[in-house]
Image (cartoon, rainbow, N blue to C red; front, side, top):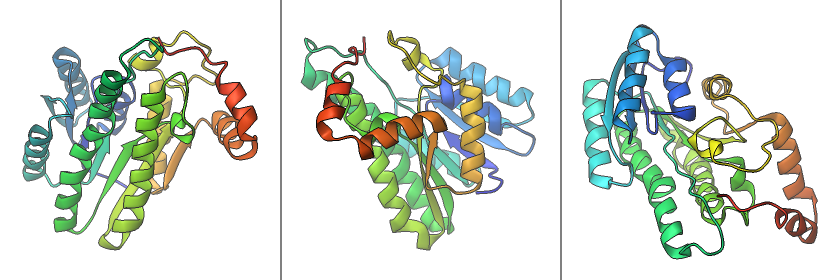
Length: 254
């Protein structure tokens, strides 16, 4: 979408979500922002207002289906939504002694169910109004299961595939669906990483890349290009045995 005026962003209290809110903030734009940190979410909304936008912030957990449906409907009543960015996500530390079931369920509640709880009500509202745009935050980790973060990489693979499928399913109704697959970007998740992160990028630069690509309605927004070529090429071209050997060398995500 070329110039969205009513934009909803989940996970807007930090990282890419915060940077996207500030990137889109401008006179004539209405931003609906959610996060789980009251102080940070309020501060981001205030910063957006200082740039001339109208901004409404809400402390909400995306895993709460009813709360999300009510909030999205309320935002749409205030100003019909042009763009919804399902950005909220978590990346908990992993090691082989964690309670794998509990760990996986906790990550899926936010990274998968949270995306569904954002996308589904927004999709129905956009169908009624005859169009709109929905962007889903996945990750380069979606391209292959990662032994260092099995639940996280699987959750991102799930929403990546879901977004790609929805794009084809709803294009005839004027709804653009885009999947975002960033590499290592400054955020609360990456700050906890204890391993090398090649081609590390600021959240502000990532937001500029995402906005430009959404304007062009790119199906898959994968960056930075170096990591895309390195990781995407390895997944496609390396024999599975070599890929397995490489991935086993990665440290646990602690």
